[in-house]
Picture 1 (cartoon, rainbow, N blue to C red):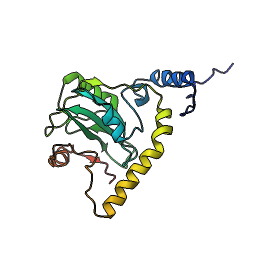
Picture 2: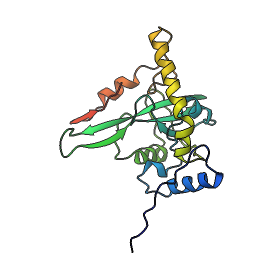
Picture 3: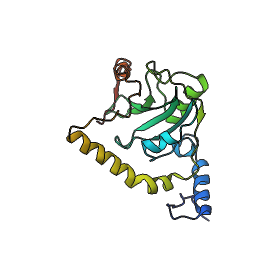
Picture 4: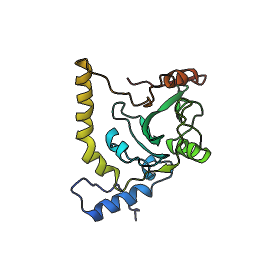
Length: 205
């Protein structure tokens, strides 16, 4: 007799509380290397909503970078301000059979995003030299990722469409995801200088 394969419960904003609970439990029961198994990963929630969830010094979460699909953003609270950092992807030996991807902020590289988060929380190391921000407390999601995708998907598209129109019209451009609110322009420079040998950082701008 074939063993039944567990499948992701299908949920949306109209799902019952019991269905939402079941879907969340399923996600959190996945392998530890699966980003969905970590409650601090909030998927497609938009930047403004992520900032609303930051209440105390050291609070943090990981979310999708809507303007750069496939990338992730760390949102955290530091010195009474919400900061946003894109998690850099480093491609080792690109376009070969040995190609692999690691993740980093400035220096150390990690095989998975959970490994990166565990390191920075456990060692209380600053996310960047420019900001000095330290992450301590995860802000955990209370709904499954499929719920957030349904609720915020259109909102995110409209948000970035509006930013694009502002840029074309010559309005003041908002801060990019990988900049901190203190106006520092050194973060990107440091990232370029710390690029490991035989590695290429993916850029989708």
